[in-house]
Image (cartoon, rainbow, N blue to C red; front, side, top):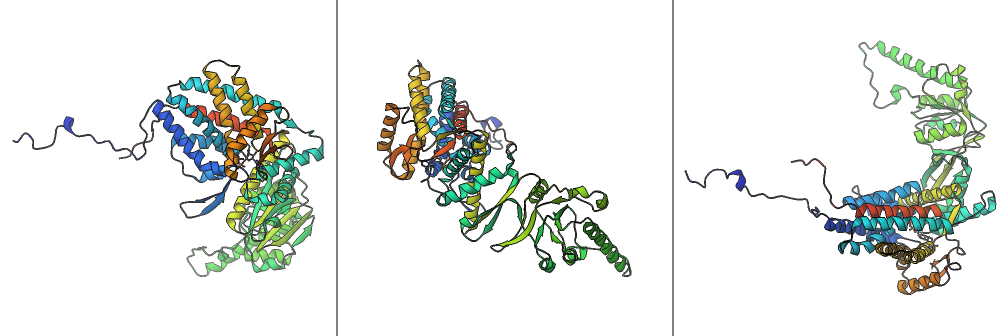
Amino acid sequence: MNQFSGARPPMMQPQVIILKEGTDTSQGVGQIVSNINACLAVCDTLKATLGPLGMDKLIVDENNRTTISNDGATIINKLEIIHPAARLLVDIAKAQDAEIGDGTTSVVLMAGGILREIKEMIEDGQNPHVIIRGLRAASQMAVNRVNEVALSVDKENDQQMHDLLIKCARTSMSSKLINTSSEFFADLAVRAILTLDKNNMDQKLIGIKKIPGGGMEDSILVDGVAFKKAFSYAGFEQQPKMFTSPKIICLNIELELKSEKDNAEVRIDKVSEYQNVVDAEWKIIFDKLDDIVKSGAQVVLSMLPIGDVATQYFADRQMFCAGRIPSEDMQRVCLSTGAQVISTTSNLQSNLNVLGSCGLFEERQIGGQRINMLTECPKSKSCTLVLRGGAEQFIDEIERSLHDSLMVVKRMIKNNLFVAGGGSIEMELSRYLKQQSRLIEGKQQLIISAVAKALETIPRQLCDNAGFDTIKLMTKLRASHATDPVKNIWVGIDMNTEQEADMFENFVLEPAAIKINAILSSIEASCLILGVDETISSQQQNA
Ligand code: ADP
């Protein structure tokens, strides 16, 4: 037998290991640098969106749906980021959005700024733990400094507090699509939050309804619960559309005959049985309808469908009904009116406290949509923002921007410490860290001054995005903060004049919590990235 025929002995099998494109097999310094580069790529995607003159992104998803947004959280949510280190950064930025509602772009850019400064140190062989220690020290110094310089207003002074809330809301909107109507929307956002109970500003009690059409300033705030009518039968037209102090019943009961459904199926053995089935069904539904009428309710709301027969029944008795109400709307109706959702009408007569009430109920036509409104509610305070605007994507962006502003206003009411933005607070922190670093010896000095330099990323990017002469403006800013740190503490970038200006006087105000959280998050993200020197896939490898 030929010694070369047959299978090769296993030892001699050539081994070809196939790795997915882009798989990173490096370890140690190589891996850290590769992770830093991945994070810098995320920063590069977001950096052009920062600030009032930042650009929007048009994101197309796999279903060809388009989203136009300037909101950092929305953009990173829509991006399909696979790199594990970049995902870490993204997750931390998302946490900022969930916790504070604003400042996501700043977190990513500041983390990018820090990692860019640190990258060279890593490449030069510095121990990551030494760097992490320095970063944590810088983080603490910066946070303490924000708390030291932050301003506050007297919480009991309603006028001062209201002005501050409006200014903070407007700042949070200044980089968004609604910037041109920021005065209008800031007022809406502040009024919405102020309707809530101060001790429990539950944002779930603020409903948002979007009705395409009209201009964005046609948006309204309903001081109560509003929901869209999902379905309309002929009988609806005969129902009253307005009640004062009505009793309201909330149901999770289907008030629809099976024959009204297009997918109903009834199996019988004899044709004569059919009438019995029909009679039984009519009896069941009429018993329920009678129970509801006897309860004294004038407004009947159900999470399940209310069919043609029931609609006509209520119309004949001058009652109003609406079915298929989304559960979150029903929840707000219950919280506001004191009603409880019931799943059966038996024993209703002896249990009438499940009914709720409100001062005024009305159905209004807004654009092409019917809206039911319950106002002057006796129980928890709630409100609904009815947003208008041309295209659907446009209203979606209004909703996202308002969400950020609502969070900012809420945050300001909880903690009334604020700082000025426009890069001024970052310049002050940068100056302060540089000054402090000089008092420290050794490598830590280098790391703290690296963070000081990274803090300049925000004002620098604000200039870049506005198309200003960044080098000239940054030099001026640095000089102003260095020469008179007390007088010039709030000097930042004036977007209108391409000059430096006092951001406090320009009313560019932000909650201190945004800046504190952004510092903590960006430094935490950087530390996490620096602490990872190998990526090991624990996923099951399928053949
Ligand atoms: P983020 O997601 O970090 O909030 P934004 O795109 O909303 O990002 O930009 C916020 C930055 O823009 C903050 O540094 C803020 O101080 C700054 N900024 C907002 N309004 C103004 C303004 N009118 N003039 C100068 N800077 C502003």
